[in-house]
Each structure stands twice: as structure tokens, then as C-alpha cells.
Image (cartoon, rainbow, N blue to C red; front, side, top):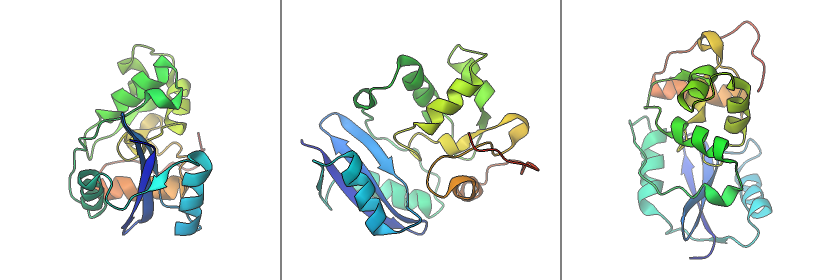
Length: 180
């Protein structure tokens, strides 16, 4: 299978995902500038990707149900090798992938889980380069004291807040939230 992508519309906006023969390569979250900007972002990163509205119907349905507030455990094959990521980043992404719906952890806790207890900032950097947000739920990773921390995806902290509220997760709003 060559690179293919599909867009779906959710109540949070239109999003896209990209697959190759080894699995899911990338999820593009809704763009504040709209669907045209979303397709442009996909084509900028994956110029050879071909759109296919029939691609991965199971994942499309799971994403629709997730954004409608249903508790979902995504069961999709991830291809994290293609992103050229370090072993540390892949370990962080896989550990993050295990955070259950509606629950949160901190950057420091995630660093401890992957065996690098002093690497909270490096975990934040790994979250910022997460190729598959929602599937790898980086929005469930909070700063110390359960504050939102950062969120580099389109929509920033407001989008992160909406996702956590959708899941019923507990978090604190800090007096000053600093992007990661």
C-alpha cells in the first residue's frame, strides 16, 4: 500500500490520518483555518499521499465515536519507525499510548515509566513531536500539580482542555500556563 490518507468530520472539526503498508503514520488534528488548511498540511508532509475515503473504516468509526464522547480504546497498528524518532521517543509514545481514557499522568511520571526519572522535559519534547495525537493520547499528559502544561497541536491548550473535558478527566487550570 502506498501512502494514503483519509479525512473525517467530527464535532471538533475535520481531521485526517495517513497510513502506509506498515500502519498508521500520522494523525492531523483539526486546523483552525479549516479543511483546506488540513489537506494542505497533509500534502506538505506527505506529498505522495493519495486520498481514499474508504481507508481504515474501523479507525474512522472509532475516531467518530471518540469525538462523540464514547469511551474508546483504539486498536490500530502504529508505524512509529517511519517517523525517524529516537528509541527514547518511541518508548515515550508507547507508554503514553497505555494511558487509559479519562485518566491523566504527568510528564515526570511518564519519564519514570520509561526508566528516565529526570527526563520530564525530554518527555515534553517527545509529546510535542507525537505523530498520532488522540491515538497516542498526549493530551492526557499534564504538568506538575496536574496543570495543563502545554499542547503544541492546533488549537493549543484550549483544544487539550476540550479533549480532557470530553473524557471527564481531572486537571487544574494554572494561574499561568506555559506552552511546552
